[in-house]
Image 1 (cartoon, helix red, strand yellow):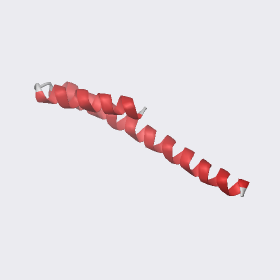
Image 2 (cartoon, one colour):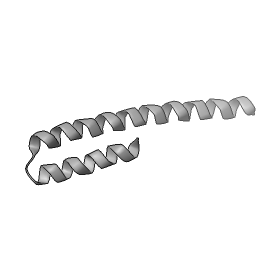
Image 3 (spheres, helix red, strand yellow):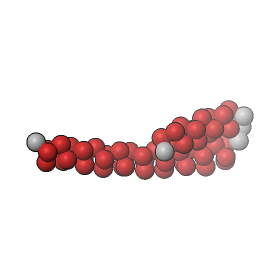
Image 4 (cartoon, one colour):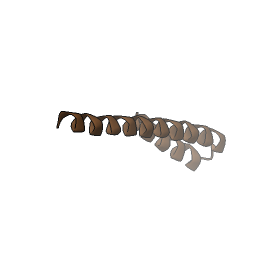
Length: 57
């Protein structure tokens, strides 16, 4: 998911460079949403991993 967020971010930068500001803003929003979802999933798995390691010990 982080890969897709980075791809959309790069596409947003390129389209903004060429003057497609509407497309750039829309793609930047998609990249921001994907990155937010990635961070939430990452934090959930991080908390689960810490809890599991404490349960084993």
